[in-house]
Length: 337
Image (cartoon, rainbow, N blue to C red):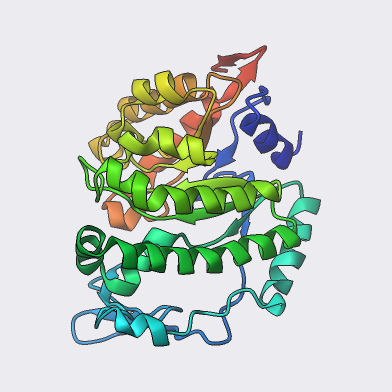
């Protein structure tokens, strides 16, 4: 099987010869990514070093800051932070112009010819909206002015919907988005609030992707356990978690095995920092057996910044070798040779 066929077979829970790989750091990946060019009205400015910090402006006009040169940073000033009146005059990025996707279409064909599964990258409404208002303001808005929040979410969603269709025209197999939804022990909003305000937008965008035959892959950090069932309902196919143990591996397997895929490195907060090779290898084996034991369900991952973890690459190398060692299927069962 090609890499693409392995991923497709796993997503169908149809028993590929091995787990899919989505690793880095010199380890194999069955997945490739394509994305559009910047919008013609982009406000983006690259990272620049200032007095004791780094600063950049994103495509939407939000100003970001960070202390180091290798972390993502956070929005320092949102483009709509001054007040909701600014929304009526705001010009959204024109991200659906065909020429922005010409290179993505070429690369998608190349990657398919090489046998890879291709994901098109898009933003997602909560992250974009919270950046525009800045997180503290946005969470207050959710409680105090939910109608304005919903209006902004839907405006953003329609931008993303057009991007999804453009990427589908390029031939991608799925879309990849990311937005962090929780702290270490709870969602940013209550589960009922999430269902009332955010779930309809999730369902709308997943529906747009599925209408074009695309799978939906979503990264999220933090505790999102209470809404995972909702994510299945709206059509999320793959959850990319860097902290799978935050939810409980047994819980994920018992409640979502055979229904949802989990793309994960060995947990970056609970296990990798132990620097214990035996624990790291055991965790990799456990993820495969429990999450991937449904003819599919687990994709081997790699956290992209060892520097941010404060760990040398050797510990993720242990995890990746374990994923490759234990991640083979034989007649529906996993084998460890």
